Image (cartoon, rainbow, N blue to C red; front, side):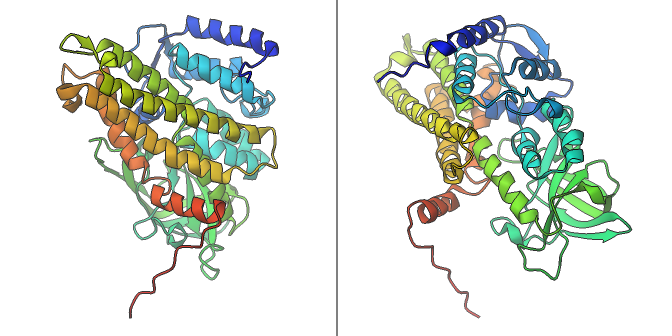
Length: 415
């Protein structure tokens, strides 16, 4: 079996390799790194680098100009404007991982909203929001869950009324990641109170500096305020901030959720993290032996490495849908979310185990490794196993829709 990409990709591989050597171990800076902390944890970027110093906005712009990010997004919306090519995408990911080059910025706006606007948005909305989002100028949060609408998302009660050409919104959202750092929110609002619960929802874009919005941070088990409560008190936004038509929000939301599942466990980020783990095991020692030479640890590493390779192969299948639009990969995205989040939690846990007592350190301890990123990400991915649709629910959907198994029986509550 020939697993080479072919001679036609040799020149492109050399180009990417040259770029990666120039920017290996680059340090990406920002005026407010806190709002990108979650992205860096997800992307597998290391906290300890010793290369070129580049601002985050310049780095994002450079990757787009080179076609290493937003490759197939049209130029008129701020992307590179190239044709989808799964082999080039794989080459980029492989070389970036090999040379420890920082990934592009991601997040809810880039990974979830941009592809949704390309599918559902008006031309005005695409022009207004996609470029600024891709370039990291506009940070987004997602207004979905409510105190009584978590797993049953369609039960949401935040209300929107169209009054004199403007939406007036009242209600509450919860578990809203990065709301305190965001300029915009894409939000599910009940605008058709007489319709069925799925048909009465609309998808509305809300500037976070609009009067009437209150944000209350929620500290999670990473000891960071990764979540927030958001309250709306007569929040007024323009009518044209509606995406698609009134009552079509559930269909738009499902598009977002499909992109979310794929972004929560990016296989390229997992490969980056695996390479960082391997280097850690080569550097850390116990009784004078490198940890990678200890059979029990090396065996666990090989098990994780095998799973990472399987996830990488699965991601190629998902990528192929970009050149074959008739290919349905919705279940494949659920599988990636299910397996990928559990794999990242296992990978980060292995790093903590091999560090022994140092693995229990956190935050500002002078002996903590890699800025405490292993501990932070271990706890964070435990949360992601629940977030974006719990893995138990993912298993039910995969078994029912993919394997044809009977639906889980509904238990009727006793009155």
